[in-house]
Image (cartoon, rainbow, N blue to C red; front, side, top):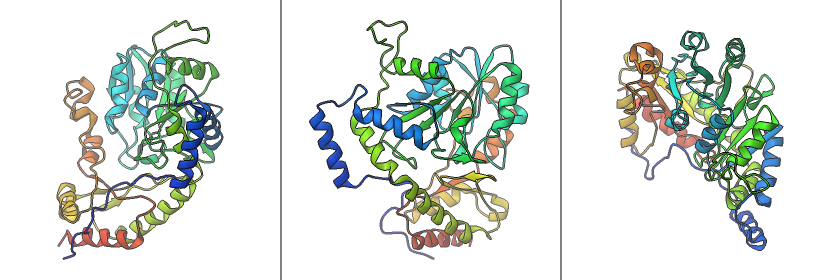
Length: 375
């Protein structure tokens, strides 16, 4: 049997700016004497991100969670919002923080995304929006979702926390829906340490969100509605500016590593690799497998512990389902009988280490341990 790694192989490792470049940015910030409140670096970052993401109307925020909360607020949602249980809790929490009732919809087994064929049956007179998630960077069926939204007069907010830079059939992922949220947390392909952005379909939504992220203060100093403090600071923006020059190389490197994983694991019975959908320019945020314990001969949980014993950090991503969390499990839509696919996937999915500095030799060794775990 293979020996454990001497040092932990983490599931992610943040993309970092070169220290010399960061030192220069810090000096510029110190010289400006402005650390926050929509400084020069934030203005530059919004402009460059809008260009990179093919977004006409974009604003940055201190984190993706607050961005998502403000997306709900500026669209003036009420009542019920249909979403997926197979997501990070922040997605659902953003709804509840806006006094909205989440309604869970089951997912597609192949993509892990919300199943558009099951959305319409959940729509009631109280439904005001759909909040799908582009899980692991794979886009939802945006055409079907928009058709449903148009038929019923609903708004669409996409949680694209995993989908930075993704393009689907040549179109930027933020081209769809009324608002798209990106997360720039340190665990993501692209980061500002903490941070996030919203891309808007209409300019008035950006204007309102910009006011709301600054306590709701208008240019004349008045406040029409209470906002919050969701401003990105200058140091975070500096990190983001520098990493925009590195993120494409990071994605290229991740693609190579993912190919090594696929080659090493592709012939193992009981392992299914989550693959990009057709027509996708992908960003490789995670390398995810699902385990069929009957074919693989051990469960996902046993494999997780075996890898952990070898100093390999993986993640049961997303387990438990949001619908099974204490704060949401009593919702009518959280009934396990209504979410059979999501519950099955949550019990079998495993995210393996993936980041640009991971070596092919390390990946091959991880895969060797996965093979040996069946013996």
